[in-house]
Image 1 (spheres, rainbow, N blue to C red):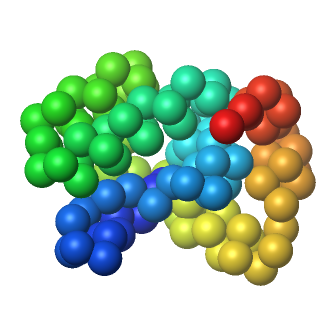
Image 2 (cartoon, rainbow, N blue to C red; image 1 turned 60 degrees about the vertical axis):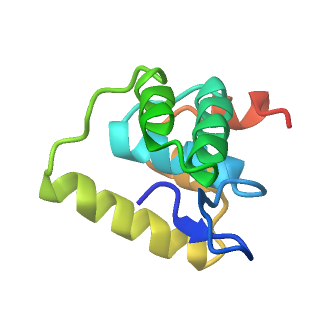
Length: 113
């Protein structure tokens, strides 16, 4: 999973993206096997806000407008994400992970809050 679903203190669902932007960009790159630009993060944050308001259709539309194709239920993709998550949890930086996999980490350099 690229961004975890959480709930706020009022039990309203949202995506856990804030403070995890570089991690999310690295996981997106690993899932799609190509770098994904920072505008995807802004759309994901907008989708998270819609989700927290209970507007699931708008959240889905905002995610769709990122323009990424639907991921296949491919075991290789699932394993890559599983392994990447474990490495990130073990303190490997998103940059080192992307570079180690031969992916250009340019989105991490361009991320601005």
